[in-house]
Image (cartoon, rainbow, N blue to C red; front, side, top):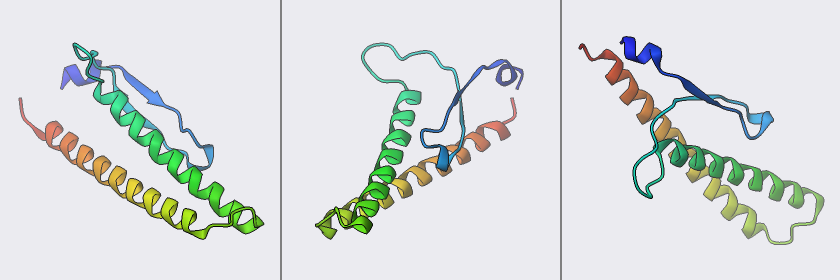
Length: 107
């Protein structure tokens, strides 16, 4: 438990201030070789989900102003964003559950 208290944490700023949240991820060593770190993979996935949600918002505004002629594009973007958001939520839930299990372990 004392090692956990000594860990330093990075704080990610929200990409979209309207949908603000903060993720605290402990600093970890970079993996050896060309493999990306877990932190960079997670950060990239959250960023892609946010970009997808922004794209849906932009397409909906275009539809409302009459600039978007193909409703099919908006429908596909909405379903894609919904799927990405559900996956991101499930991964966050699993990570939280795993962290709680680790914290409950007795040394």
